Image (cartoon, rainbow over all chains, first blue to last red; front, side, top):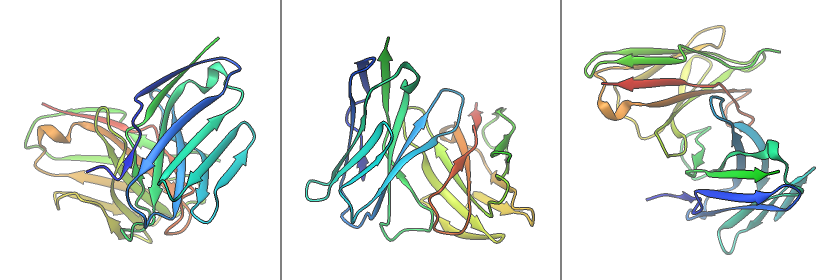
Length: 114
Length: 113
């Protein structure tokens, strides 16, 4: 059973528009959430994070929203650029497991068309 | 500052063999975590090393073991390889246990035939 779910395997967006990537989780003990971006043949790169005590965190073109009651978070990219095309992973921690244990979703492949 | 370096980049092994994967952590980082990413899946936590000791472990059998050296580099060893061990193995370094400021390497692609 997956504790972190990214139900959309892929998303295609026009350059300049907003990209919204979604993530759902099942474990209410999670207290920290992160988004990573991964290009082919490279390791995941940290993008943005949010603590469970907040509902929004913004960094430039990237904003993460957290809805704890719905156990849902989303990543907004505005405006989307072709260089944003990559696989985006949602990750969570704080389930009482091992230190440094991040639980990842399966990822969403974002394609930004020029 | 150098990033996380993993070697080799690709590897093919036969079922039943043993394999050692290596990771050099980013300068200034003292914690190393290993993840397994199977095709179409997200990375799955194997274990973490801090101050040369295993600091936490995911749901992996004992044939997955590791080491961390005084210079904070690390090895992942897998014994008695199975076909399902075929995956991308990612190493991530960070400063301090419990930190999520991971820097990931590009990974080692292991194929077991």
